[in-house]
Image 1 (spheres, rainbow, N blue to C red):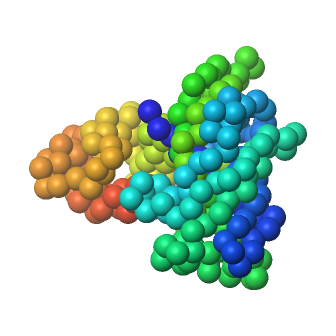
Image 2 (cartoon, helix red, strand yellow):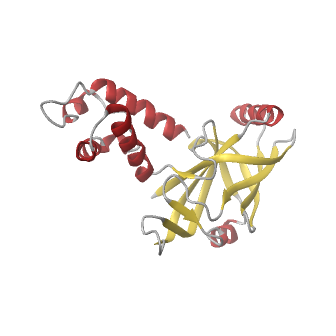
Length: 228
C-alpha cells in the first residue's frame, strides 16, 4: 500500500536551471499520522535507486516534472537534490512558484510517496508507529503541505481528520462518529467522489440531519488532503 507524507520543504537552494536541494524528511518527530521515521529507514531504498526518484506534480504519475538525482541521510533527515525538467510546462510552472516562494519567504510543499517495509510500535507509546524501513517511490511538489514536520496522508490519517471534523464541526459523539466513518469508507478510496447512490447509506439514525452538506464538506476536505 502506497502512503503519502507531506510537509513544508525547507529549500536550501534553487537555481534557474531547475535544480533544487533541501530536506525531504526529518527523523525523530511524531507526525499527524502518529508515525516517527527513524534514521536508516531510507538506507536500503537509496542504495537500490541511487537516489534516482521521479518527481511528480501532486502525485499524478502522468505528470512527471523531473528527477531526484542525489539523496542521502544525515543526522537531521533525508537530504535530496532534485532537477525539474524545464522543457515540461508543469515543471516550469512549479519552478516559477518555487522561486516566488523563495523570494517572499514562503514555503514550498513536498510530499513523499512511499511503501512501509518494516515498522514497529513505540515501546512507551503503542499508538505511535516507528518506521524502520521504507521504500521511496516518488515525491511530488504540492500546494498545501500538511505539517511543519511531516504528516502521513494515508487512509488512517484521513479517518482521523474526518473524525475530528464530525465531532468538532458537526457535534457527533464518539459512537456516532465511529458509525459515520464506517459508512463513509467509500470516501477514503481512490475515487473519493461518491455518486447519488451513496447518499442513502449516510444515515446513522432517524434523528440524523440532512447529510448532503456534510457529504459535500467531506468531499472538499478529502480533496484538499489528497491534493496535499
